[in-house]
Length: 271
DNA sequence: CTAAGGACCTGTCGGC
DNA sequence: TGCCGACAGGTCCTTA
Image (cartoon, rainbow, N blue to C red; front, side, top):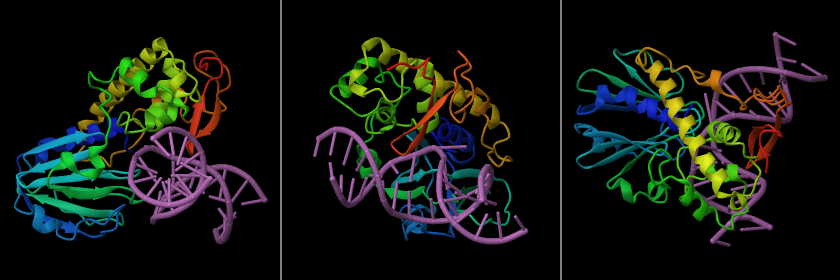
């Protein structure tokens, strides 16, 4: 379930339980995620205090004195807080046990996620080339116009490219383009300043709104199975191909962009 | 260099 | 009911 808002929600949900707490035990049941979990993970992190919990793009960073644990949730990963031991299910690959008896359980059916270690996280190859955070000031239309110059790739693929801007996945890219009134197949380099501004506004609005929605599920975070779909009531186009546009009634179309399903309204979204 | 496609892996759903 | 293909919130790597 993870795009930026879900990762942010996860961060906020687990932070109070683990920040400034010591990892007392690491249990790894399945080492093969996207990359193998480091063999010496126990040695690296047991006895260490998590001094800070941060997010960079869709990565969660667990900072310790000696290095940083990186967790990516991939396509199907989740982290849950357990207040007491319970039998691990099939895809519960890793537990981190803390000095306050809390168990942080990593679960990931498809195993596209990752758990890695970096001595200096800002130099880690996976993080080094990440673009800017969409909710920060530097993410604005001037920046996008500059980096989009001459680019023929579709605007949708462009905003999903995390070397440009991090955290925007298929759902929010699709939704933001609808909100901004931009056809997803438009070449990134052909978008004018006014539309680029609209797009930035739309992306930020959608992400903030989704984080807020996640916030409402936060309350029962420790008990819930992290049910997806809390934002789904607000989806205007994603998953609605063949249904009428909520704005104008035109039947929504779908196409494939960068292997991803893309839904749009031909009359609300112009090239 | 850019852009597009394949690969990784499991679960679920629709059609026959 | 059972089997098969298509598809799913990500993104690195290879190919053209």
